[in-house]
Amino acid sequence: MASEELERQKAFQELQNRAQTTFNVLQQVMQQEHRSKVAKQRLELVLKDLGEMPADTTMYQQIGRAYFMQPRAAVLEASAEEIKTAATDIELNTKRKLKMQGQLKELEQEMHELAAGK
Image 1: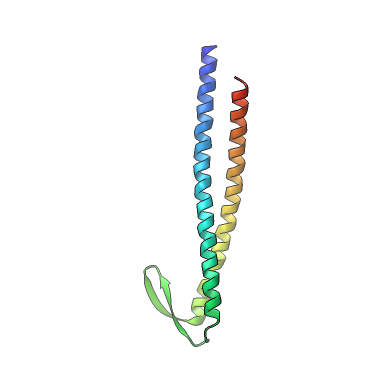
Image 2 (image 1 turned 30 degrees about the vertical axis):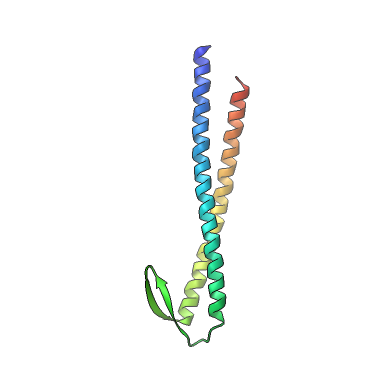
């Protein structure tokens, strides 16, 4: 009887640890998703402002910590590509978030079942 109770406690702690790990990963995914949304929104606003400038405008494009002089078309193209990348990241993070939420619900259900079985 005591060993059975000890096994239940170990199983419950294992589920708690898995749930905590899953929750931490879920928070990280949500933060990544938020950063991607903010980056995409910022890029869209920049692209809108750059679109209003004359076609022969020379601009500076940031690459890492350096700035390079680029024609307007190249900067617009690079910005559009970054927006596509951000949208892809948002989509992937949304899928990961849904998966993690499902796993967390399953773990919580298992914990409730184990606790009810005591």
